[in-house]
Image 1 (cartoon, rainbow, N blue to C red):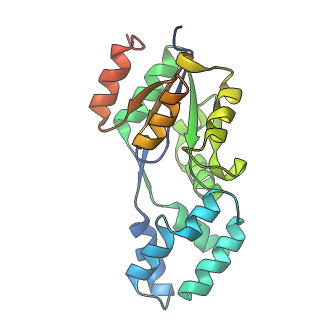
Image 2 (image 1 turned 90 degrees about the vertical axis):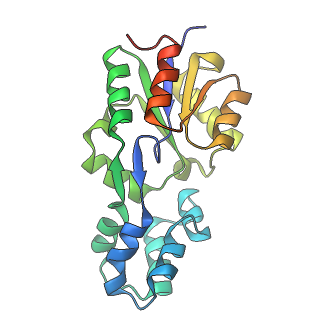
Length: 202
C-alpha cells in the first residue's frame, strides 16, 4: 500500500528540549538546589503523572512549588516551564517539504498541556499538521497499544499506510508491530535519507 500519512514524534525529532534551562530560571526563586530541581522536572514520577493526565497542570505547579519552594506566580511558572524547546530545523524543513507534496502529517507525542500550549504559541510550523495525539489527553503513553490505536483512528490509516518517525526504539518497535513503516530517528540526515528511499520526496 502507498504511504498515506507521516507521523512525527515531537521531542528530539522536531524540537529539542532541555529541562535544565527551566531549572536554572527557577533556581533564584527556589530554596531547592539546582540538581534537585532538575530531577523533579526531568522524566520524574511527577512529570510522568502530568504527561499521562493523572494530575492537572495546576496541581503539578502546586507540587513543584511545595517541593522546591518556588516563589513565582502561576503565569511565571507556565512561561519558564514551557520555554525549554528549540526547533530542529532540518526536521522542520522535512515536514514542510512533505506538506508541500500534499502528504498528510500528524504529531504523536508523550507530552503535557503546558508544553503544547507553549509550542503552539511560539512555533508556527506546529499548526501545520492534520492531527495531534497526546499522551495526557488519553491517559496512556507510548509504547502502550491504546495510543497507537487512537493514532490509527485519528488518521484513518492502518499498517503500511503509515510512516512513523520517533527517536525511541521501544516506540518505533510498537509501531512496527502494528505493520507501520518506521524510521528510528538518529540524525536529520539519516531520517531524510530513509524518507527519500521510500519515495516520498522529489
